[in-house]
Amino acid sequence: MNMYVNLCPKYTENSETVTMDVPTEYVDELMRYAHILADERNQTARKALVDIVRYTFNTLMEKEHDRKSRKNGQRRRRDR
Image (cartoon, rainbow, N blue to C red; front, side, top):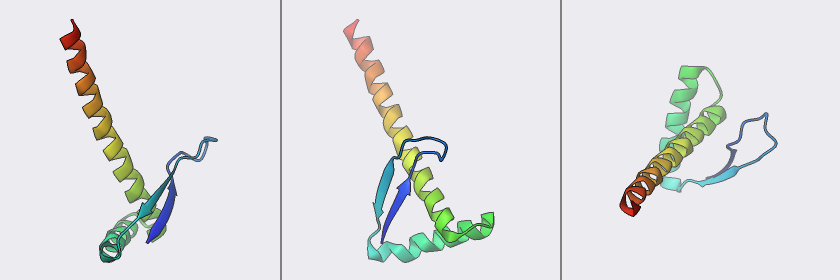
């Protein structure tokens, strides 16, 4: 399953598209999560799937940023 998700807000001119390629053995499980989220939020399964992708992307980027910030802080202390 291929899916293209624009991660930038609608009011910006930028476009940052992520291509998500889900292996066939995980499609059913991912769609089950999307349908559960869609039922809870009273929205379409496609919108719920986009929300899952955005949340996952933001979480991973935040962890990467935190890790880099820690490393840079350690380097700065070492240089003194």
